[in-house]
Image (tube, rainbow over all chains, first blue to last red):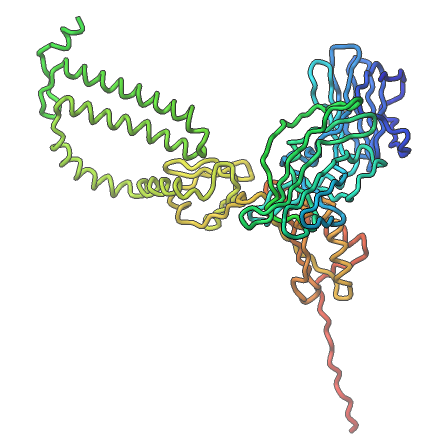
Length: 263
Length: 279
C-alpha cells in the first residue's frame, strides 16, 4: 500500500466513525503523508521539512500522542498489526483473564467448540532496518485493565477483559477470533464463566481488517480430587492470505492449568 | 637457586618459635595458593550457583566461602610452621573478653544478620515497612551488619540488623496485588445505594484498579455530620502511585458530578424557651 502526497498540517486530524473507512492491517509505504483510521483512533504520519517523519495519534477522548521518527531513507515503511493485549496500561503479566458476559454450561463428558472474541491491541512497527515497535494502542479502553485470578494472597495478576461469548466480526481492531475446543472429562456438568491463559504462548494472524489467534484446547478434568481446566494452545495452520504478526514480547511455552475455579 | 633459598638454615623468631626462612617461604606460597583457591571458588560460585539463589543469600554465601578458605589456609600455614598458638590463645582469651564487651552491638548485629538471612522476611527489591522505627521503602540488601532501605524521597537508610530482626516487618510485596482504602462522607439525606454505584463506576475507570476482585464499598460509620462510606480497591502491588494519590479526588469528583453532597461538620442547636407565667 502506498501513501498519498498531501501538504496538510499535522494538527488537522479527526477521528473516523465510519467503519467502512477503517484502514487495514498490513504494510504501508510513506513518502509524504499517511492517514490511518481505526475505531475511535486516527494515526497520521507526515514527512517534515528536515526529512524526519512526524507521528501523531489521536483518540476519541482527544488524547494526542506525538513522536518524531528519524530515518536515513527517503521513504518509510510501517506495518500495522494486531498485538497481544498485554501492553496497556503497562506490561506487567503474560496472563490474560477473559470474563464471559454469560456462563457456558458444558454437560458431563461433552465437548464443544466456541468462537470467542480475543481482545487485541494494535501495534505499529517500523520495518526500515529492523522490525521495531513504534507505538501501540487499543480501540477499547476498557481492555486496559487488570484482574486477579485466585485469592489476593496467592492469586495471579492478569490482564482483564470482559467479553461476549460469541465472536462478532463487526468489531475489527478490537477483537481477534479465537476458537476454543472445550472438553469436559468431569463426572458432572460445569458452568464456564472465565478463561485464564498465558497469552504470550499465542500468535496472532491478520488478513485485511480481520485477526485471528491460535486456537485453544481446554480440558476440564479431575486431578487428585481437584477440578482443574487444563489449557493448551493449538496452533493455527497457516492458510492463504493470513500473515503472522511480529511480536515484541518473547514467545513462551507455559504449562498452565486453571486450578482456582472457572465459574 | 630457589631450592637453595628453601634449604637456607638461617632462622627468625616468631612468637618464641625459631622458623627457617625457607619454611616461611613455603608458608607464604601456601597462603598465596589459598587466596587464589578462595578467589576461584568464590568466582565459580558466583557464575554457576549465585543465579539460582536470592541476591542477598548468594552474596553472603560467597563471602563465607571466600573467608572460610582464607581461615583454613591460615591455620594450615601456622600448622606447617610448627607455631605453638597456646600462648596466643591465653592472651586471646583475655583480649576476647575485652573485645566482646566493646563490640557487643556489632556481634549482635552480625548474629541478627545471619538469622535474617535464614529467616528471609523480604528479598531485595521488596517494598517493606518497619513500623517500630518508622521506615517504609524498598529493600536494597541485607548485609552482615545492616539492612539498607531506599526511602521514597530517594535517600537510603541503613538500619542495624539487630533492630530489623527484633522489629515486626510488613512486606507489601508478599503477593501480586495490594489493597488501598479511602473513606468519604455523604450527607444523611443522600441515597447510599446511589452514592455507592456512582463511586464504584468512577473508580472502575482507573486502569490500575482491578476489575476482579472488584472495588468494595460499605457504610463504615454513621458519624456526627455524615454517613461515612469506606472504599476498598485492589491494584497491582507496585502501582500504588497511580491510584493512591488520586483515589479520594476521584471519589469527590464522582459525587460532585452526581450532585451528592459531602457535608461539612455541623451541629444543630436547640434553644430552650422560658415558659411564660401569669402574675
